[in-house]
Amino acid sequence: MDLADHYRSLIAKHLPKALIVADRFHVIRLVNHHFLKLWQQIDPIGRKNRGLLSLMRRHEWNLSIQQRESLTLYLSNNGALKTIYEVKQELTKLLLIKRQTARECRKLIPIFLDYVSKLKNAIFEPLVTLGKTLESWQKEVVRMWRFTKSNGITEGFHTKMEMISRRAFGFRNFENYRLRVKALCA
Image 1 (tube, rainbow, N blue to C red):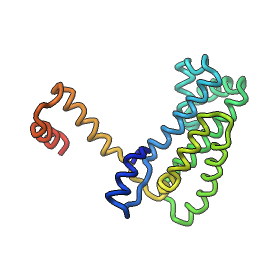
Image 2 (image 1 turned 30 degrees about the vertical axis):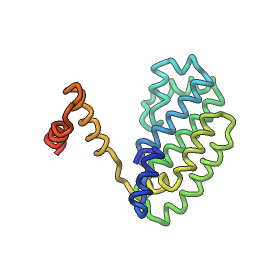
Image 3 (image 1 turned 90 degrees about the vertical axis):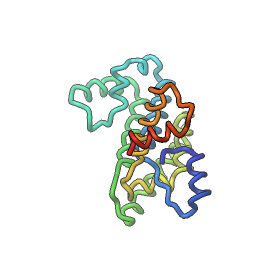
């Protein structure tokens, strides 16, 4: 599931034995969101550059040589931002690990907890907030390494349902809406 506390409490209430696994996409998105917030604080002008924004959002292994050079040039002028970018990339690599055995997960957990601790003790508010969020979701995030499923299918159905509702300018009769959803999402 995505990182929504009300979903987690709902599942805990109605399915107490269910193991909740955080959705990898949403966790990576959360890390990027807080990183971009911090970048806004450090360099508001650079943050408005759409080309740089595109480079900063990407995983470093997806950058071309020219893009990597451009990003390196920008980061060389901002020492603190370079360090924060490198930490974000390392944390992202850790979070993207999949299909691990229980033994392999036990080796990764202390590394993850070290990142959480460093984030919580950072001097920048967006990093502290990220650290606190990751700490409150640590069990669910760690389970991502074992389980590779995502909630992409659910998100897709939700998007289809929203499109149905938009095209109809809302439904006054729920039964008609339900039938339309069944027809298009079956």
